[in-house]
Image 1 (cartoon, rainbow, N blue to C red):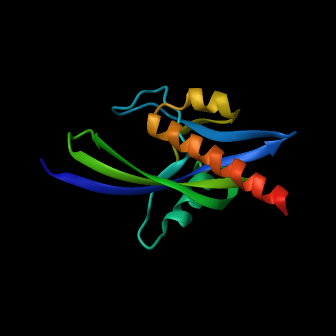
Image 2 (image 1 turned 30 degrees about the vertical axis):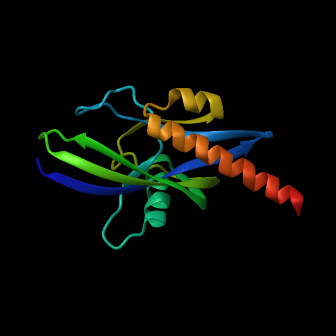
Length: 154
């Protein structure tokens, strides 16, 4: 069986609200072979000529309207799945820790996002559908905690 490859990038975005850190997750519209009730991070395919960080910023903005700056790369996840035509796909998803800067306009016609959520860590962790994304959120939180500790030393 032949395997096709896809490359995506996205962001694990955080913001501070009243001394609480909230994490951005999205709920895509249902359809295809996926469950209607999945929750994930905003992400999408890397377009020709783009680098992963550019894609992450673009996808976060398109899907959620959020403008965010990249803090650090978190991880590259490798997943396998079958598309509607039963073709095997190996997908590499590069995720970045991103800091919220401002709200903007969502491109709802282009992106099929049902709803966006800003959730505390534990609630976001419970809502996320895929274990790979849960582990990425755990890494993101650890990176952020380490960066906060480093800032307090200066």
